[in-house]
Each structure stands twice: as structure tokens, then as C-alpha cells.
Length: 407
Image 1 (cartoon, one colour):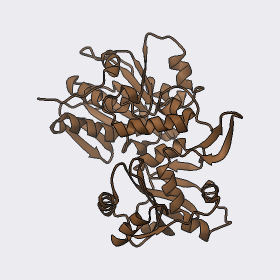
Image 2 (image 1 turned 90 degrees about the vertical axis):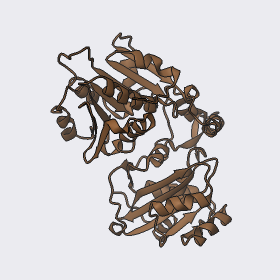
Image 3 (image 1 turned 30 degrees about the vertical axis):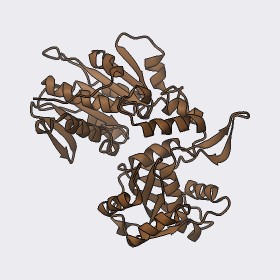
Image 4 (image 1 turned 45 degrees about the vertical axis):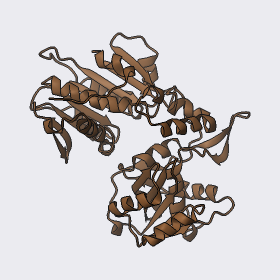
């Protein structure tokens, strides 16, 4: 069997460690999640009797994060013939009997279910906490207690946590980074350590360093910090209906881009609240390349598509493709008006909209470095999906002007 393995040297210590706890903090684009997925596939193929539990705080987000990373690793390494994937419930099974399952810890019911996990072959030996800082310390302890009992054939227990170190006051820092423990390997990586990062991404991070030094410290350097001044807090990742008939109305928002992302969001509105159903989020593609993607994703052509008014030629291309594209009128103060309108609603995001989730988690106000105060001006970096969201609500905002609906 010829397995294709591509790895970054920065993770060598992780690959060699048998510590019970491997805690990996790092910047966006460092490759830590990609490497983790690849190493789990290799480990389970090599060590019969191992089984892996992948955890996200919200179970549904596994599909487009841990599960997607593992499937990508399987395909990239050329070992698809040795694995079988199941979508409902999510699972991966190796031909040697080893298995990967996916769970969440959003409520007490889900936590209790973790206590009774069993496998047909072997035991639960490995756990991957993706976005570890989403979890409470109690969540971690519940899972840690599950890894017990003698293991055969030199197998060992191991828990990996991968995350961006947003909050310097987080329990993860206090428990794993501030205390010396031979059972713990802490690891740090950045996008600069990732030899597979493209040059366009490096340029985007360089721009963030200039525009948003506070955010760059976390998402560029992978250092402990805290993102203050977040714009939106009233959002939730949730499985939401994809049937357009479920909603009171439908609209599409588009922010044009090439070197930065071209973002398109399909939005539903129901009972005054906002539902983000689908996203298109692509770099370095012109409109002629994006339209077929929209067609394939069944972005509806009979619903209004609100677009950035700065690109009339691109709007015309969408119209020629039979989309109801129109320019958003940018009045004075409209950005803040759009934000205020969004703040008064609940925003539900389908877990497949991974780029939208990443953006909303760090979309924030600019900070005056002299006064240390936040300004009423959004940071204009990594905000393409947020711009598409702002454009997409324009029809609703103007129709429902003055109404406040927050349940």
C-alpha cells in the first residue's frame, strides 16, 4: 500500500508523543487540524483496537469540520479503499475494525450518552476536541474519565485539543499551559509554519497585521488574547430547514471579491429572525466561474440578490444568467443601520456555512489605540460574509423599518 503523507516539521513532536494530553494552540491556517486528522487516519490503520471520538460543542458542526477533515485526509493519502463512511449517524470505519464516531456536548443528554459509548472492536483510546475552548472544564473531565482500563498490545490513551487561543483567561490556559505536567504536551503553530499555505493567504494575513493588530495577534500569531468589541452575539449554529417554503421570505446577499473572498449567502426570514441557509465563499474566481457554483448549489434565480453597488458590470453578468441581481443603495450610515437591525434579531446559521461562522466569531469594532476605546466602525478585514449578510437583509430592513423582534 502506497500512502501519501504530507506534513509540516512543526508537528514532529506531536507525532512522537505518547502523553495523555496533547494541547495544540495556533493561528488560523497553521495546519493543526489538517495534521491531526491525517495522523488519526494513520494511527487507526496501524494500531488495531484503537477507536476515536471526535467532539465539537455542537454535534452538528462535526459534519463540516472534523468529519470533513478526516474524509479529506483519507482521500489525500489515497486510502479510501480502506475506509467506509456513514452519514447518519456520522461515522468512519476502517477495514481492520477500528472506528471513528462524532458527538457533541451541548446539553446534559448528550453528556450522558458519552458515558455509555462502546465499540465492537477494541476500546475508546483517542479523543479529539476540535475548538477546545468551546468546551467547559467539566465537559473535558467527563470525557477524560471515560479513558480508563488496561489496554493491550502497547496501546495508550490520548486526548488532543486543537484551538485558536482567543481568551487569555480561559481554563485551558490555566490547566494546561500555566502548570508543568509530564503528562501534557503543549504545542504552538502559526500559518508561517505551514509550508502548504498559499501566497494569497499570506498576503491577507499581512493585511490583517496592519488593519487589525489585535486580531492578528490571535489569528496570525496564535497568541493568547481576547477579541473584545465583537459586533454580533445573537447568533447560533443550528440545523435549520433547507426547504425555502418554510420561510416567510428568501433573499440573497453578495459581496464581490477576487483577492479577498467573493461571498454569497442564501438567507431565509421567518418570524422576523434571520436564517443563513447556504454560503458560497471563494477566492480568485471571476463571476463566470462563480455562476456555475451558484447553479449547482441551487441558489434560486427567482429571489432578489442584493449586491455591492461598486461592481455594476458583475451585477449585469448575474442578470444575464437570469438572477434577480440588484445593487444595494449605500446611504450615509447604512452599515451601522444594518448592524443595528441585525442586533435586534436572532441569527441562525446552518453548520455547513463554515466561513460565515468563522467571520461572525471575530467580526468586531475598530479600536482607538490611543484611548483604548472601541469605535462605531467595523474592522474591514475578513468580513466578506458579513458584508453579504448586510446586503442580503436590505429588503427586509427597509420593509420592517422600526420593528424590533428578538425572542
